[in-house]
Length: 235
Image 1 (cartoon, rainbow, N blue to C red):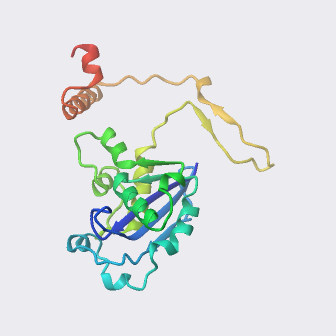
Image 2: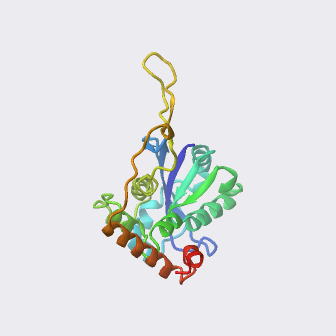
Image 3: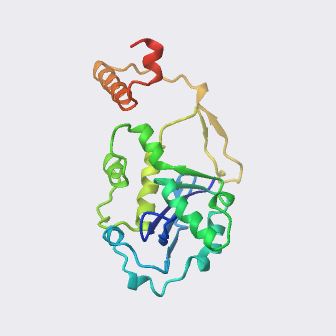
């Protein structure tokens, strides 16, 4: 499935109270690889940005005055997103703004266009409970270079989030490997079933066991003692 990593910048924090989208950045992934088929829009929001929002994105009201309004780019955006899985960090925020813009343009909500919406913030919270999971924090934790990010920008943030998402999901989830593509003679490459191999069993050492116990304790603390394994084991 095509995946589109999407980010927006807005005039403020509440679409329902009249704030609008001023920038949309989209980055395409195919087979977990960046394709370069990206989309980037600056938009005239027909209102000024709040002072606090200006400090975050640095996009002046004057810069946006001659930019297109959302209805002018809606068809191109929806065609680009059609049928894709859309990955957004803190998805409810961006989706609420996209849906409001679509509503104002007389168009149905975003769910009617895309296959699914994945919230990378929720994924990060499950993987790193009790830790900071902002985009900057994840870049630091997952060794994604964000040195060029002095202000928020939709396309730059989408590019960073694409790298973060790939790192968040790079674990091996199956013993079947689909090589994909074709051989030089045009024949389809086979699916490799790794279950037929004699895989070595690696035993955790004392340091790794201690680190595992600490991770379980951190998760148990973050969930306020409601973890399933504690109840099951009586620990």
